[in-house]
Length: 281
Image (cartoon, rainbow, N blue to C red; front, side, top):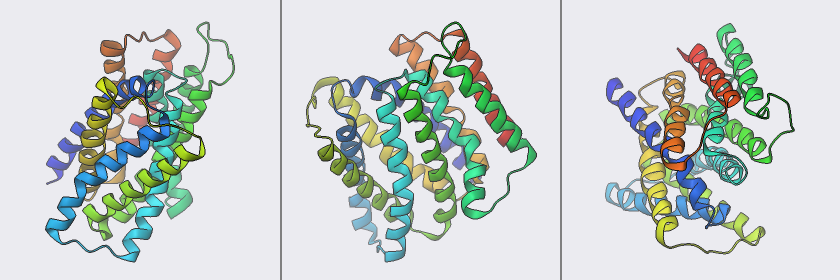
């Protein structure tokens, strides 16, 4: 069972890696919060039949846990989608991957699980890598890109989500826990789209295909699989597998997005991935 859980997380990470360039292209036509809202509503609709067939009951306790975890999930995808408006898919992937290094520190703040020396060293390496990513082409600091700042908050939110999922997943029904999160994120995102005056536009052709792909595979399938898999392996093992995401993302960005990595981006990304490996190996 453990081997299958690991293989499943690798497949999910591959799918997530492909989404950076897909989302970046889609939000050029679909407003960010509208995109996030529809993404999670599609995923929720797909899960409802399974809930009905199995007769799963939704408890108040599970709803509260779903809202807490869903808030972190909303923050992650809201900040990531906004960030992709202003930064490249490859940089977004590298900065998002910082979430893996941040997991031990978030777990310490919430659950008092003290990080070890290796995890502290890994964070230091990742911070140096992040600094390299935000440097200009000539290795000069030219200010923080708005997209990079948004994406850093995305990484914090995802670190929180990984920690909360690992904590709650052993005491909840997987389907209802995931469905409640999807509904919560979908509704909150829709409310934000109204607040910011976003309009539902661009829902045709490639953007519509991208939205369906993201909703079905990168959300419904991926998060049910993640929640199930984290029942059978440790949080740190899951985080190590998630470190493959920026590798897949960069490959997709280069092959299908025409992106070219600068020297400082290669150095920064390598340091972040190195920090992840040191922290979780």
